[in-house]
Length: 337
Ligand SMILES: Nc1ncnc2c1ncn2[C@@H]1O[C@H](COP(=O)(O)OP(=O)(O)OP(=O)(O)O)[C@@H](O)[C@H]1O
Image (cartoon, rainbow, N blue to C red; front, side, top):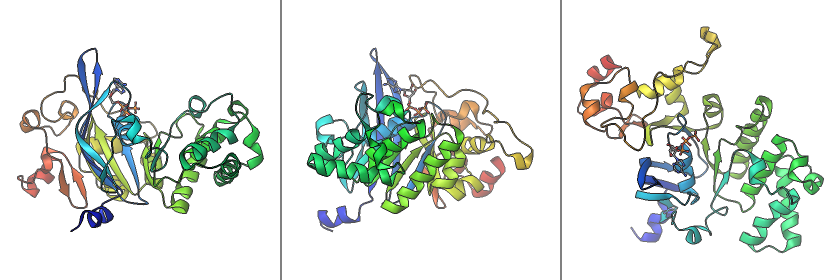
């Protein structure tokens, strides 16, 4: 097959055995290791996991927005079959906002307080798309309307808008250069519950209207169930399970995924409180040997201390757990879980 044909058939995004370390006073913190997944055009996937599991690092690596003390320790990210220069700021510039953009949490910090919002949305259109000021302002008005803000409000400064409106502005900015992938890093975290639901509804609607692929980082599993096709569960810097939303919720495999799903309040079963997972995630500077979850795992076996489980395909999903390693018979697997 020719190279051009291969690229044509490549997934929109492929993250291939990606590892990212943070340098801290000469010590390397392994924030993510061996992270591998694909994203198809128009697909919505969620990255889920406890705080510190590496969700934001994965997302920022894909967008080429890693902090200065981060370094790629292995692997690569491919966009439409071509390697993305994720650790080269200048080389990443043509991709940022045009191919991959990010909606961050806490719009107040991301927006410039002294510029009117219309100008802030118009700016990437001038810088990235080379639009004239007049054309960029027209595009900015169009984008405001798309995210449900009357274009006249474009004269407002960020502090004159509600939190929900500001987050809509962030979404408009993320869409300004018509990217194929939008990453939402906990895009609704700072908002009240009703506004959270409105913003998620907007993202879901825009995703289908514009055929966007979405990578959604969230702690909220109910949001995942309503807005995503697939879920990737992260633990201590690795993806431990991946599957369709319905498979993960109805038939989770990894003991961590099971506990995570069990932690959600379920009033229909008389459980109204969050049930925290006992124990703490490991220190990523000195990871425990073998499976990082073993110290909290109700199904841990001696092999879990000795070997890192490989990430294996299981049905339509993937799981990294010794309970499911292919050398083990299926009957034993069932008995152990
Ligand atoms: N700039 C940095 N320098 C050093 N360590 C960092 C840096 N950014 C993140 N880390 C560490 O890397 C690990 C992964 O962090 P990351 O923010 O990717 O996790 P997360 O799953 O997104 O967490 P949260 O849900 O709290 O945002 C954590 O141990 C975190 O403390």
